[in-house]
Image 1 (cartoon, rainbow, N blue to C red):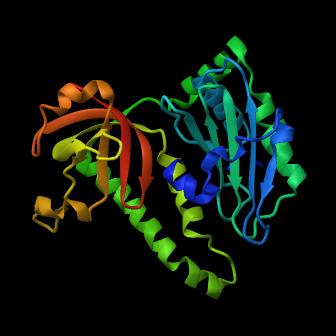
Image 2 (cartoon, rainbow, N blue to C red):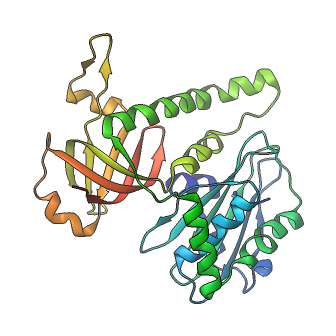
Length: 305
């Protein structure tokens, strides 16, 4: 038994995935069991592996997860950290999400948030997070070979070409169904006598499915400009959808009513950003860094010609 970025912070607690920063020297010493089992426990552990790269650690985690039948998201690697999400569906009513995050220093954190009604003995959780996961990560060439083999086999980093409006429509339908599930979950739970899960617990499997996926997105610029807080240049695609038998398309003013598709441009794309304005065409490749029921955000986006 082993368990995104903005979404994960809400689920895993205010301190996010770094809840174990003050943990012990070994994984077993670092292990923490937090909360009341009646609310859904949080389990966390960490291990430092000197000299290991973020790509190697995440690739080895992918290999171990797939070997036991878990689903694995794509890798999300930034200068600050690397993240992968693992989903367990077999044997559980509500999917269990394992978040693994690696820092450039080689410190690897793993965090699991159980849903209400999901019970695991603390010792079994420690065995799953440490003995079966973190303690198996290998430094050096052996670990890199395992990680590379897992990447080649899963092919998660091969980008998929898609039109911005088509991507919005496809993900928007799935997000809409999820939104309806979230809004009706408490009522359904009352009638069935079963806990349907909190909104965050229903949201995480959706996030895990798309996190780290790479897309080549072709479309029309709706807005572009620097985020006032991060100073990253953000480009929103025009995603208004055709309606009815005639395929009439809504005004751009209605763009915000659709599932959003945003690209955060890589730092080396500032020259490109200076050439773009609303209604221009652009094709960008990026990695999904964030997703919720309102839209998807691709990071480290670069022009594709």
